[in-house]
Amino acid sequence: MNLATLAVKNVWRNKLRAALTMVGVAIALVAFILLRTVINAWMAGIDYAAKDRLGTRHKISFIMPLPLHYVEEIKQVPGVNGVALAQWFGGKDPNNESSFFATIAVEPSSILDVYPELLVKPEEKQAWIQNKRGALIGDALAKQTHWKPGDRVTLRGTIYPGNWEFEISGIYRAARPSVDRTTFWFHWDYLNDTVEARRKDKVGWIVSRIDNPGRAAEIARAIDAKFEERDAQTLSMSEKALNVSFLGMVSAVLKAIDVVSVVILVIMGLILGNTISMGVRERTHEYGALRAIGFLPRHIALFVLGEAVAIGFLSGVLGLLIGYPFVEQGLGRYLEENMAGFFPYFRIAPATALLALALAVLLGVVAAAIPAYRAARLNVVDSLRRVG
Image (cartoon, rainbow, N blue to C red; front, side, top):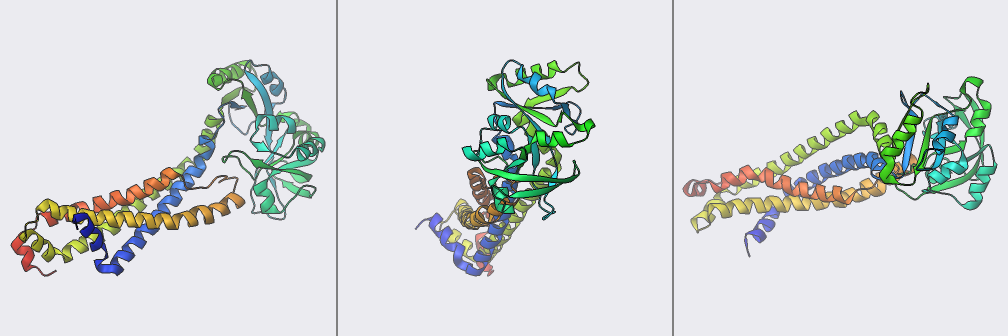
């Protein structure tokens, strides 16, 4: 038997305290994993952004429209091999006002060419293209609303007031985890033919596929230069940069989550430090006896640190065992099915799991540093006189 074995066995000297400590640290660790997964889910759009797509919007603001003829002009820019228009609609399901999902007017054929990760059955694709009032919805939205191909639905317009009737033509699935599976896509022509004259022939933004991702910045500059002298100037950027700009709206929330995750780490350290300090104080007499029979100060310090590492590691394993079913299988599945617009992919990243386990062990060592130092400096005579 060596010091490491003794340290691990000593963890269970006080079974109730050890169990409560591990449960406390594990719960804090689950909260840490949850917060980091929320951040990772928000960043999924950046991490999985296509390198061969550019987004073009109005230079001043995303909410200002662009003229329709810009679509044809962008097609003429060298390096662009596919263009799709899009317009945010802002529709709501009158039967479920609290439900949020993106409603976007597009040109069906071009949007599916530019976004090949939208997987649609051939017959449903044709049905959507041929039906001017047709709509294509994500599988998560279909599950949430119980809509199916052939259903007639009515949405209440917010940006474009009124009741708008649609027919569900098909359901798409996603080839990438970052794709929003709750989007409601419908014909831009249907919208354009219905709105008042001042809003006709306007698009919200334009998406382009390019032939060489290495020339993305060059092609973006060429697109913007084409409209530099126009009344409506443009700002083109990579899909990743476009997603980053969207995240700028919630940057304060992400920073707050970061701060809370740090607070949780401090709480974990305090829990571990309290348990380890109590154990060292109770075993002062034992440490004195070990010193008396020849153990060196470094042996005592390693004994304390070894126990802290064991508690931290076991707590980390327990946290992961609780975290995976709770965060990924429970809460994650719910968010992906009901809030896919915000969390299309809510899974614990392997790096997050390893980081959580490593932090549990590291915090155990840090929390034990002062108790281990004090135990190593104990006077043998005073230690043997002390009972607890």
